[in-house]
Every structure is written in C-alpha cells, then in structure tokens.
Amino acid sequence: MDELTIDTKHRRKPLVAAFLSFIAFGLGYVYCGKIVKGFVIAFIGAIILPVISYGIVAGFSQVNIEMLNAILVLSLISLLIWIAVIIDSFFIARKSKPDYELKEYNRWYVYVIFYFLIIRCASNIALDMKSNLIEAFRVPTLSMYPAIEYQDRFLASKKAYKKEDPKRGDIIVFASPESRNEVWCKRVVAVAGDTFEMKDNQLIING
Image 1 (tube, helix red, strand yellow):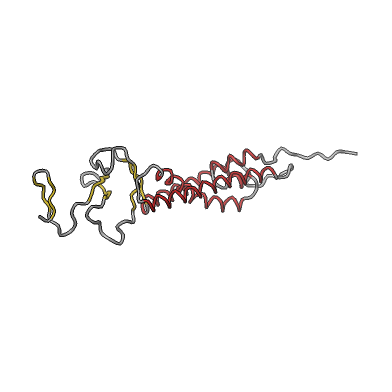
Image 2 (cartoon, rainbow, N blue to C red; image 1 turned 180 degrees about the horizontal axis):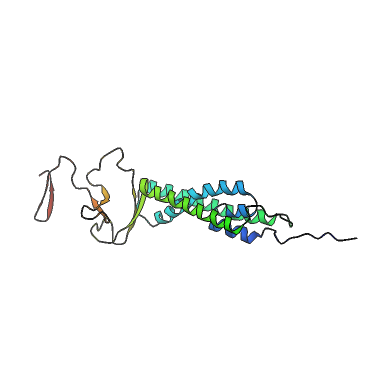
C-alpha cells in the first residue's frame, strides 16, 4: 500500500506571521491567507500607528492634563491591540493546514506593496493630525524660562483657537514673522484694544 505524501513546504510559519504583523498591521493575516481580515486590520493599524507615536511623545510632554490622559489611554489601547494582532496571527499560522496551498497574493512582492501602503497611509494620517489636531515641539532656548525650560517637550493644540481668541496669559505657538521656517513659543501679554509699554525693564499693560 502506497503511503500518502503531504507537501508541507508552504505551511505557514507562526514566527513569520507574527513578525509580519509586527512590522505592518494585517500583513501577518495576508500571509496566512486571511486577506479580508488583513485589510480590515490594516485600516485600523493605519490609524493606530500615529496614535502610538503621539502617545510616546505625550508621555514626555507638558500638556493639558485631560489631553495627556486621553492620548496615553488611546496609546495603551492601541498598543494592546497591536500585541493582540501579533499573537492572533501567530496562532492562525500555527493552526494552518500542513498542506497549505498558496493563494495568488502569497507573493513576496505583494507583501512589500502591502507594507508600503500601510506605512504611506499611516504617514498621511500622522501628517493630518500634525496639520489639524496637535503638533509636538521641543524647546531649544531659555526664552520662556521658567514656564518652559530648555529642551522641554510639549504638544500644541491646533484647535485651541477655532472658536475663541487667545487670552492674556496664554502660551501660544506661531510662525516667526522673520522666517516661515521658524516657530516661536511666546506668552500673550496683550490682546486687541490693550496698550502696552516697556518702562525700566517692566512691561506695563493699559497703564
């Protein structure tokens, strides 16, 4: 009686699946033949990666405490999802059939394209967050000492003055009037209608 030979050369490798999920959300699922699940997770990952990045920055930043807590909580949730995806893809590969048949998308160049699509999408979302939501800064001078010290990091909200004007005492970030490539961080000392003068190195507002 002839023995049935099973071709196991294409069986999915758990460590490879986990590694692919580590470098790109959803890629481990595509490797395991779960392309629909892979694209769904990839879409989620494109949002999660920027959140994790901003969370890391926020962890070393001086920001509004509510904003800081929200970003750190979102980052923790995102990190847990990332770990869960890595573990899940590992066990899916482990449970795959020994005689797994390659799908038409189980090609190295498809994995490379998928990876760069995820990175590009995540980069676009991160840039959108930077342009419209929050932006991270590092202070290179002592001009705002002691409120902000040299080399401090902080997040500036891009929505802070969408519905209201800056108030006296606010610390704001704005493009330098001398160079659009420079950003200044200063405290608002006067608003529309105020008069101010420097006298004996003292700032005098409205007399």
